[in-house]
Length: 128
Image (cartoon, rainbow, N blue to C red; front, side):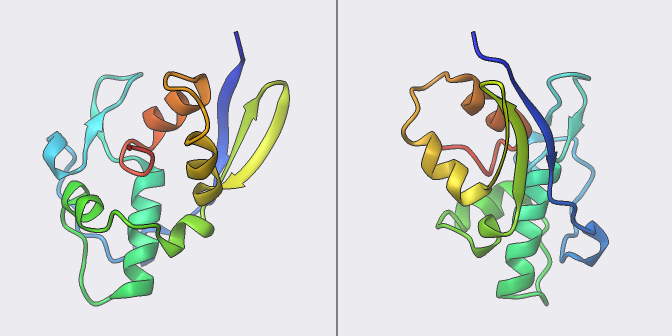
């Protein structure tokens, strides 16, 4: 069994991003149930990807629903090149951008520990 854990990711000043999200109390607005606490929350990775991309594309329009935003923006995003994740995988510390990780995941079998880790921490960014 492999040992996999997320160590960190690119820090983003969320106050600078065009986000106007309601409290994360429903899954349909982009909130999801935290697998540790059981409370609803927004993924910091998902909000960084969506917020940075919106900042590049159209900063005058705020994102009000993460779920709708990820559905309507399903193509590869420029922000996926700028957000890096650092994690421990197979006894090595790795740091890759989100776009590279999405391509790498396409070669892994479903249920791989790395895939499960990324889906738990960024469900919209890494969903297929």
